[in-house]
Image (cartoon, rainbow, N blue to C red):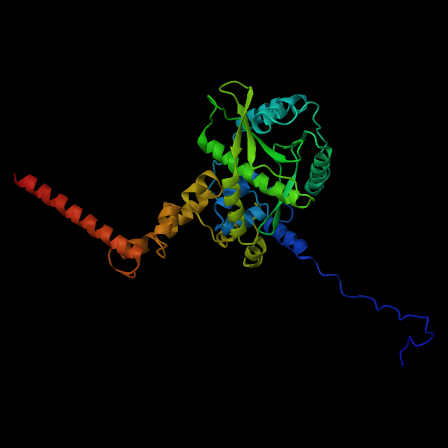
Length: 398
């Protein structure tokens, strides 16, 4: 007989739950990433520039886990004895901040005028645009406040300038918080990303390499804004033409150009989707792996080498660990250090020694197109050297 048997109006007492609630996967991942970074080491925020570089090399697990864990790669490179010159100078940062302040002065009147004239000339002029306060506690709070401000701006059906909003984007299972220079909401409810750069536009055009880098950054912001828009009903349109604002010629006066980032957005979205999820990479690391800068150099080297890298010459302009990875790539004789196009042509031949052996006929499948091409090239080289040697002998005899 049950000990709870009695009046029909009495219900059985619930048994106490002695099993602690399981930690969510998100909390478990955050804890694991904090352990990799170092318990007392603050996380370095993953900005759009770093995210665009990560998307450009989705096969590099090393960068994916270091960026996902918030590891300061510049400090790590110093500790590994391979410091990188990658990054902006303090002078460039100061100049950029001063120019941005000038562009946004007077409630962003000049910035809004440029948006109106370059992107939406048919709309009402942006007189008296709203500039909401986006301050909140922490990146999560600022992200929520930005989403609310965007929704309110759409409902207001006028011009709104969001100065340094905070956006969030899921990157291989880790949340990246992104801060564009500005986002403008048009009277029709559409959203435009604004990128403010300190490099000049000379006679209406700027350095193509710098414009390309700015477009890739802006594409990341467009992707993050699309996530916010998808949660609204109806979803506002995120414009794929962003506004790039730069100094005119050699002055400090702002000018602007509309840049179509549809191609960069599509490439970035595809590459981010190819990234191996951070928890998968973290789960494959040896127990006790840690990238904290206070660890001995030997231990840090072992930790970094525990994660596969995908070095290419392009990394030199995009990653703080590039010099370290290049040295390791040279030591291993990897063909990736010769560039991605050549690596793709060589198929299964992954080292320089493999390539030379295949060219000499010492190894490799002769039916492999890469091996056949190498042997043909080696034969042509030998024929050319023999011909040159024969001419030298003939010249010496005369």
